[in-house]
Image (cartoon, rainbow, N blue to C red):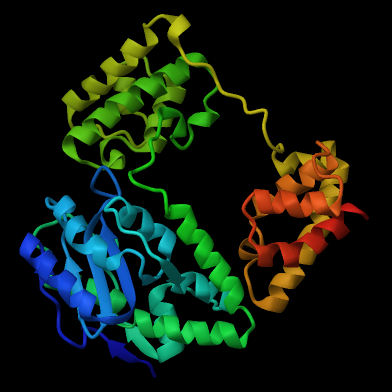
Length: 402
């Protein structure tokens, strides 16, 4: 029976939130040895963006440090970047944490992602608690990941949870490296880690989004619907930014799109839209005015639906309209699923399914790919790693020459 790890072994660290704290902690980290385990706690469900409100750092000879950079983000970067940047980092599910760290000017020199290591090693469950249990037979106390981490002060049980996220992370990375090495997959993992690091190396701020990036907007077809969606998005964005509030707390995407689809003609009709936050009548009136303004604006200013001419059509149409591509895709799927079972690696980690479909389309329809060398070059150009190309290119060739 797994023993429970319910609290940090060295006690719950104090939250470091002053310039003096940052500078003192930087000196301590500089004196530590080996890789640095890092995790972040964010509040994207409550705040406008996904910035880190708590950063957990652990290094041998130092222990666990908890940083709260909000309000002193520049000072935090000035103190910690010279110590953390360029070092070997250990992170669980690195793509979720690296952007918020990059916004603080923090970048790893090399990276070990324990979650991805678990996927490549064939673990059935790769969340941190499951992997700790599998590798160390210890039950990690969890349960506060979705909290509002912008809260001040943070409750002690939340801080305990946060510290435990890095408590065994260095040891887990060492164990996973050994497992991958025994399986002959360590070099593959290192390629993946290097790719992730490179993908985040140039990030300096959050990506700029537009109203067309809103999930569901692409399903709207009429210019009037798109005009309403745009105006609702702009108003929501302004409110969210001004109040540092998550857009989902202002007007959820699903509701925004449904309002644009329905085009309500009255306040009462707007209030009946499923999911609309109608508790305050003044709020309903505010949103209806925006809808009315969009619908009474000049139709010549209404946006048109964007139709992409790039890439392959959805593969659901291939069987009826593109039989050559469908036959190749079907054959490839059977082959890659067999390799997935043999290696214990999920199909999507062997090669993104969308990339495989685009490669098949480029070979069978656009004829952009004509030879095996073309295929290998195409895969490299589209971000496939060398180990993936070596495993998957022969499968694609076999599927395409049948």
